[in-house]
View 1 (cartoon, rainbow over the protein chains, first blue to last red):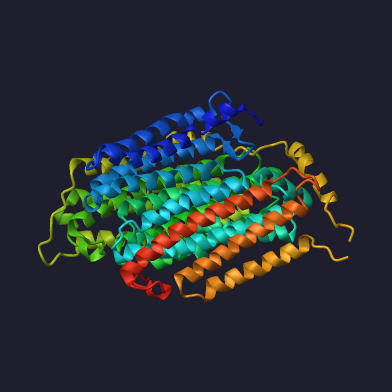
View 2 (cartoon, rainbow over the protein chains, first blue to last red):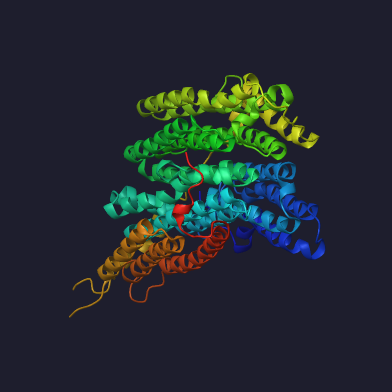
Length: 522
Length: 109
């Protein structure tokens, strides 16, 4: 049911985003008070993030979980709330990771700018998860992208960082331009920017070619954020060049937000089209996901840089999630199993990547190298770190007993329960990819355990806080791997995506316009 | 009598879009590519305004302005994107002494 709220109540629903924007402004003002402090902007950022986190439940307070605010621009539903909690908690972890890894490399006067950009990207991603209007989707993608471009190039005189940022901004701007052109075609075909309105019209009018071309072009923008295969070229270069915490942030938050957006769009179509109606759309997206996963895994096989290796691994994982998300286009209304499995996957993926990148960051901080060869003999020098990295890599592969395994199992089960015949192919693709990925996930382990380091290299000794962060990730993975039911139930409870109903009433606003086209008779 | 209608604007928009894509694919200069991107965005803007005026505006005295609002946002965000992009190009120029995108080839694989 659609709940329309008075103006002020609507504003209260987006309090998390508002807190983030307030924190963005506040963090830029911090240097006027504390000029030479690193801690002050970090504290302001963290307070902003925590306040936003606390206010997320307020978004759906007292309305049975769902509201459509600002004339349907945003949909605040359990699904978007869950993703926002995940995103904000993850951003807090990223700030903590930054403090432990590359904070020392950064000039003190750069810290507020850095935090402001990080918060800005977070706002964009939070909006992406609940955007349900083309205008809002465009603004959210841009709001998430632009700070990310700047963050990727944050190390100003670092050649690879600069190069990565150049590629990122050119690819990003080009794909978002094509995407907005697609939106203009959709508007031309349907006459509305509202997602549910578009999906309704498509199911009633049986998708015109104009609408189809528009949708295809619009997906370019989302595919870019997902680093799906034709548009993935930026991903490894940006990940290699960017500071490690930005790599972590982009690998999880940016892709997660894009998966949420994809789910919302596909579900809107399924909602009006009915179960199994959009099998063609689902197949197209599934092929995209399968190609992305396979390509990511194959290219990852010969990577010698840990960040690059994890970048290709993240392309592969995005591929798995796209494969599962594709079937959302054919689910029955109210079926939240796929959404639940994808949210569970995101939770697990967040901890795996956070852990693996943090280890890489801690090693790079002391050895200054991200090369796999410099991991040789790490098992002897710093056994704790090496064991933890092995655990994260095994979980990324999908070792039984760890979160990554359960995440893949749930993904497969949810796909199978939705569409047996299509899912069968997808599950085989998922399985083959998992087998391929074992090789490259084990390469760092091989170097750490079996290759002797010829010269006597440094012992990596992270501070206690670093170990705490890694232990949290490891525990989360073991917990989701051994006792997955609790987390799985939680994610499925929150996986309900709500599509705005009542297209009829909004339709009456749009319909008379066609008849009144001036010069129609000429 | 000859009257300008929706088709004229759609053709114009397609031409601008095609010009943008060609610029995007042929230019080696980063600013040239940025110009191509701006052309595509403006093509989208033309589409939005034209469809709003001729088809989905609610008639002669139409009050639906979704498309026009969208165009304003396109203009604003294109400007913001140009600002970010030029800052990154400047930084690239400071590091590589060139804004030829073919120079950005240190990372491969």
